[in-house]
Amino acid sequence: MNRAAAAPERASAPKRYASVDALRGLTVAAMLLVNNPGDWGHVYAPLLHAQWHGFTPTDLVFPMFLFIVGVSIALALMPRREAGAAPATLLRPALWRAVRIVGLGLLLHWCAMWASGHEALRLPGVLQRIGLCFAAAALIALYLPARTQWFAFGALLVGYAWLLAGGGSYAPFDNIASRLDHALFGAHVYQVDPASGRGHDPEGLVSTLGALATTVLGLRAGDWLRRGDLRALLIAGALALAAGWALGQWQPINKNLWTPAYVLWAGGWSCWVLALCHRLIDVRGWPALGRSFGVNAIAAYAGSALLLYLLIGLGWLEPIYRRGFADWMTPRFGPYLPSLAFALAFVTLWWGVVTLLDRRRIYFKI
Image (cartoon, rainbow, N blue to C red):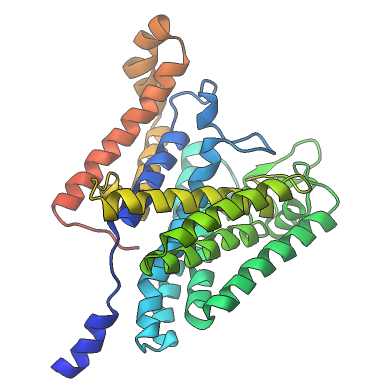
């Protein structure tokens, strides 16, 4: 390649923010923490999702990750598009990556089915939702200008709020999102109610409309970040929190349905946390704690899930927990602390794995 051709490519290369890698990594570590207690019957309340309506610290974890997906797309694709790269050229690898993420999610669910002995393969899932939101947000980032991106965000919120309200119920299994998902996927959802025969999936296709809105908000936040507009992040966070609280008086804040009130409430906190991380890490030079997880995020999530399913399938998980934690800790500290200790040990194990990979510059790109 000649120098004239190389110059625009260098100019359009995206800037990498240590704060974004760190926040992505801390989010993945939090996913592992809340998904892997030693005993699901003894988990401290802040480490559990709200049973249905409501919000706990754990309910911020997944929307924070999707928010960072949007931020990362803005940082990676928008500078190249503005430098003159053809949107179609940038879109093809993004869509192919989305397909791989969805495929990996289905593979993990097949492993979970083997480990648990379930007869039906669950089709929706965390990675499937990430893949769909990644693909749609990449399209929006490449083909819609900033003002139209805000219009898309508003249309997703209004349209999804209208759909949920028109369904007539926000109750488990009876809401319109669960009913449509069950009609589409049948028994291949997370849960089927034995009494009614209706199904529900917290990562269902319909509620992905709300999840996409979260990702689009991340797009706009990423654009502010790369322009150094910290004030916009803080103001947006305050406005989103206020709007989420106000909307929550009419339509519940609910992670399972990813309601518009939940989008705004979680999005407000996400804006503030991103602004804080940027200020402390990028500006003040604090250590980028969690970066090793962040640069191998999907690989760490998938690898930890595969390890868990293997331990379950071989019948080793329960003995490891009982002998390594519960048998000697429960008589001294009660049942909650050993359950948390197992989750922390699981996170620590994978923190060591990703740290070793980072030191050797081994990065798994899905």
